[in-house]
Amino acid sequence: MLKQDSIRNLNLVVLSKSNLFLSLLLLFQNLISGCMLLSGFVGDSLNRNMYASFVCSLKQASQNVRKWRPAGADKALTFLDYNLTVAYHRTNLLARYGEWEAKDDGGALEKLGFVKGYRVDVDVPQSTWAEAPLFHDVLVLNTGHWWWAPEKFDPEKSPMLFFKRGEPIIPVKSPEEGLDMVLKYMLTYIERRMSAQGFMFLRTQSPRHFEGADWNEGGTCHRRKPLEEKEAVSWFSLSKRPGPNAEMNQANLHLSKAIRGTSFELLNISFLSSLRADAHPSLSAGKLHEDCMHWCLPGVTDTWNDMLVVRLLQLQKVSASDVEDSGF
Ligand SMILES: *[C@@H]1O[C@H](CO)[C@@H](O)[C@H](O)[C@H]1NC(C)=O
Ligand SMILES: *[C@@H]1O[C@H](CO)[C@@H](O)[C@H](O)[C@H]1NC(C)=O
Image (cartoon, rainbow, N blue to C red; front, side):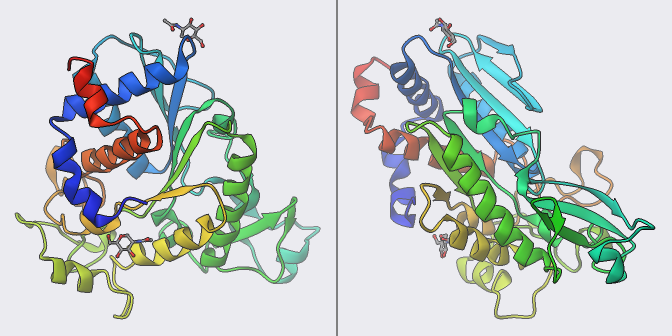
């Protein structure tokens, strides 16, 4: 995990952004010699945000690109000069889910009085990314705010109903218990399929900055300056009554528990992003609700990718001096 200290030192290493990304391209080229290398972002719209930032940064170093989508991907670009493909696979919960309705010849859930809801198969990956671990060399995974989304998964009207090996899990579990099960199964699923040279990251939760109310109740984000460190800490603290922004730390508790004993690394972007109440789109680009959840580009997600790239370079022991020696 990247420590706060090494984040501060980043600007010593990184002479310029395109230099950083060029070193990534060179690293990839050295790794592969004649093979296509693939890098995948798997997760919700915040990982799409991160994907967009990643390909924009790479394009600063190389514009020779072609659209080509590996299996299940929502979006992807191939950097032809480097034989590198970067893809985004859309999935909200990682696990497969779909609408569920009670049947007349009722089973265990019907007996408990459930009429409607969402079936979540904790041990089955969503098809959009099920094959991704077989062909990606780098995977950046995330899941988060959908587990705290009562406007879709209403605890009364449309609860999450968890299934394992095709059967309902009885007694029924809370979404947070479901999240733990899903993470356990999905991380294991990936580890069993990724190549031994692959890199697996679980990104921590992206903070939201709704003020006054939640996203669908008129919450806003009109700040012009980042929060003070103290302010951010109390804003997201779990010890207070959980407000619309408490999910960051809630989610992170589950994520850090899930990676213990696995070969996943946590890409911890939460604290540095939590300061940036000023960096969301808010009402720009004709948004219906204020968007205090996604990030403007260029912006915060670029820093997430800087951290990712620096970590990949560290893992490959390619130093900044190698990059300079190569003439860039
Ligand atoms: C790019 O990757 C493909 C598939 O692995 C391979 O067939 C091709 O030779 C590679 N091209 C270059 C220029 O390395
Ligand atoms: C992420 O980093 C921050 C500070 O850099 C730390 O306080 C927090 O505990 C870390 N989160 C996780 C889930 O490791």
